[in-house]
Amino acid sequence: MRVPPEHVPSRRTPQRHDEPRPLISTRALVIIIVAIGAAALTAVAPRVAVPIGVGVGVVTLLAQIVKD
Image: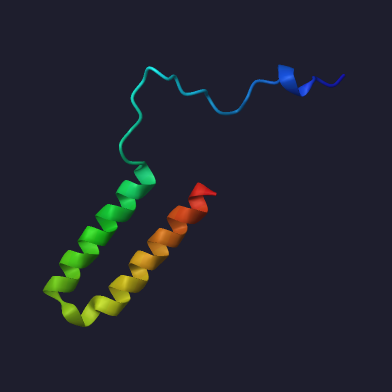
């Protein structure tokens, strides 16, 4: 016996309107922290700027894949 779609509970919990939403998502926070770390490391050692940029790009792409 099949259950009609309107009777199946949704997988996502509904967000209550009286609760505040976070200002920044966890994914965005990770990307920002990695970018700040990369900027600091690049300022200290400019010769490794390209590998750091590639690493930041990889982390950003992985965060996007995890989101999907």
